[in-house]
Image 1 (tube, rainbow, N blue to C red):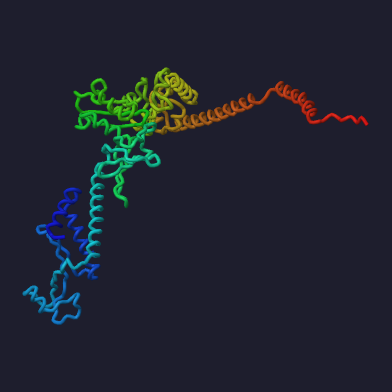
Image 2: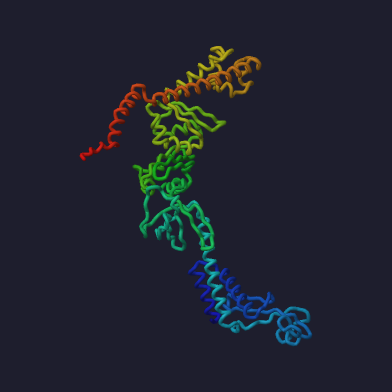
Length: 467
């Protein structure tokens, strides 16, 4: 192979495979270096260089210039050195050019194998570098095969894996040749090459679909705050904008629902609720629980929990089928949500207020003050700090301590009563499950009637002897 042909091959491979020429040249030099070691058994006293201008490979073996040569592999006489370089001096190292054509067939084959392998490695690294920076993006591929429920997609230059765990339930795409869109969630470099992992169930897949459908999201005018999904069934997404003239929800819905319908069709009918984000957690959770109406929201910032009161007739709507609506709303806002009906909430308020009135040393006015301050029951009194109660009740800490002890005693008695009540209910159920006396007598009578018949069936009549 002449130098011009080698130069042309390097340029063609670099152009076709998208591999940097410097990588190919470095690979080529390493391959020649390996071939030189095999041919001549050299250690590291040589150098391989490639001229990009001429396409020529040069191999120089370095030898020490000496008066008398003892080791021809590492030394050269001063007379021979002067022939190569007139300015050579004793003790310096001189590079002696080797004939690359003398490597032989085995060395050339070895060099070829190294070059091919390095080209594959370089192409593999290039693909990995490309896809590791695309994590979080949607890509499109063609279904190549299905292996134990896992789908392998052909992306052109690489293959990607859509595991069964990342596929939307009840969604089927098993036909070879179908085009499929999914989200890149991971890119790994393994021995077989880049492994690209995809997902259609990840919440970011829904966000990326909206970014593709809604120009305002792609441009950053409308921002997606949070996404909660139960893939294949229902999803909630909250959006916001700093532009007062833009309706973020309307931008995502589109004219006659055209934009959101594009996302729904890609997800094969998954229902999507688009919710406006609010910094006020009470307004935010009220929107998140739509279509149910919200009467009251009690916020516990310390425990990041919300008590939401809804009309009695909308309790099942707020909770959703198998708790789906409240579960998605809780994931969306990032707070724990406890939904109660209005009647149950009012009963809880009444019972809590009555528990305050029953405490020794707590008058009706004091109970009102505690209730208005957020201590709506004896349980809240026990959990409160003595200093806070003293300020509300306008009493010294000694009397407050007595009230807290009375509240603790009240709760203990209440717990014992509840346990006793549960035990009585359990006993009543066991008694109801037992047969009555008349039923037991009837069973005994039936058994007595059945006994002679069963005995008769088991006894044969005697045979008369006519003799």
